[in-house]
Length: 399
Image 1 (spheres, one colour):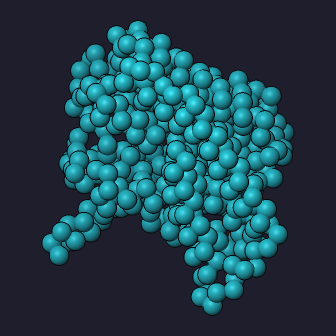
Image 2 (tube, rainbow, N blue to C red):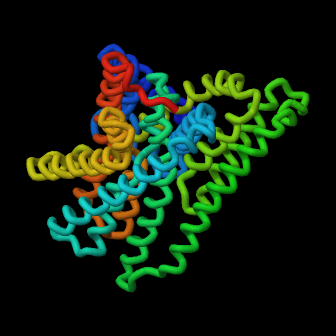
Image 3 (cartoon, rainbow, N blue to C red):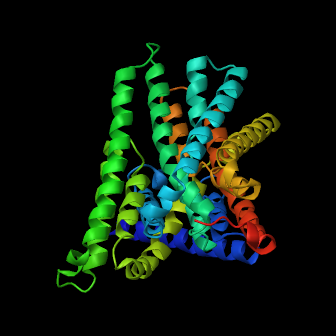
């Protein structure tokens, strides 16, 4: 019982901190996600210590709630993203996804090798520069009611491609750490499986729902459509991990399938209370995972600055070049939308530390870079979207 009450008290602290941080950020004209991440840094092990490292370890209640929170967030984003809309920006999203991986991977590899890493370890470091955190950008776009913009659809479509390529690259660099190269045939099988999963689930599931969604209302329970699609969300989130993808990709696909039903608007309203409860845990936990003590030197801060600049510029360049056909303003929005690394960079940094590729300082710098990109992006993205909407409404791309 004592253990249960301790968990409840910790959840109370995290949730209240998220609300306070979000409120302060919004009063400063910043998206609430910035305040929630900052709140995690404040109450985390590095400062107040109200959250201990043991409480945010894998499999703990906080970690599980954070994972459920980001899964539901991407599910809700999928609910507002119709397959037909993604098809209209498919070519641009593909270019953004590919260039948004190649440019950061190349720049990250060169930086790591220039700082004394062997090439195989340099590629591992570079992998942390690659994968975009769709959860961070999705939350900002949702807060600004911008999910129906063409730029938003390109970003979300590119995030799926980005995730496939990032997981493939991670598989390559992990296999290289043994010094024996990598198994190309195995990697090609993994890539084919990931693409096949997305195609079958995304395309096939959406068509089935479009033809007949009345069966969602056949159970007698009053909230049966919500219960069924939430089960679909959790199931596809799990299945996506079996194909080497992030769980949030399966959740996004589940939402996209549910968006084809006639109950779409009802489902959106019914998921809002769940999001309000669970998504703050994800952002607070993300902010609490950085050890600020490893950055308490001029050399470390200089390295962090360089790494963060490379991380921002490389994604911005890749996204901007890939979407330039939509115009410079839209390309800049898309470029910044692909910048945040968030929990993805943290996961890769953890793998690098466990494999002995990173020391504690490099690990702290990679994690800090991931969180800084997550904190820098929302206000810039919000400013760009508001500026484009108010100053140049005639240039808003149409779908």
